[in-house]
Image 1: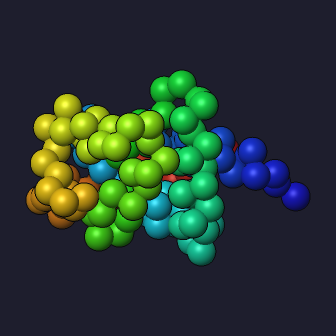
Image 2: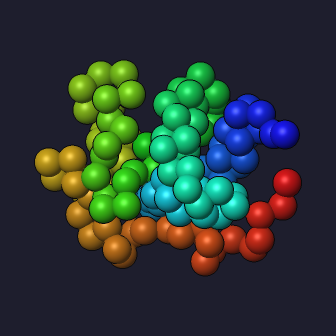
Length: 114
């Protein structure tokens, strides 16, 4: 049986591959790693990622482009500021042109290899 740490490591591996200036969703990551019903657990991994260097957690949002995880970042608007520093426009916690900058690992990456 795999541990939650193994699950988190698989999530982090994918999140590290999200290109600068692009975003993906919790669900897309869950599907990519073979756990399609685990979007919420991907969210837990993103919350835990703040203690792991090199994880661009700001690039993971909900399926509608909302910054639902922003309260897990230090400061009031840090998630938004990090995204804006990558050229992503956010208005009222909603990523603008979401469909254009959405990155789906299921389409962009080869099959997941452990």
